Image (cartoon, rainbow, N blue to C red; front, side):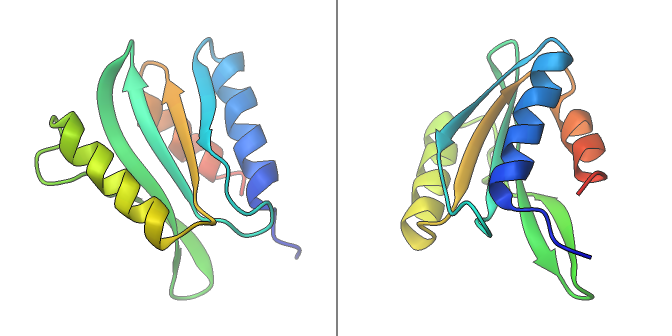
Length: 112
């Protein structure tokens, strides 16, 4: 079975978020084919989880919360995202602003 490209998955997440009444945008575009995807969740502009799609043993992808220790610290989160971006130039950074964003991401992840 062919794997879906990162670009296709990002576009799908944006469309699903907008269809559910939320807002999603690309903060940083990564590699169209195989870039890692990092999702910054928000709910009415308040900070939510930071989720990253990672390759797991067994050939599957999993979503992990990768928030800094103090996840309410926006400076710590920004520093984490910047470090990830420096070490992985293929990284996609997507911001999703909708109620219960982690659930929307989980449902979207089932499609991929």
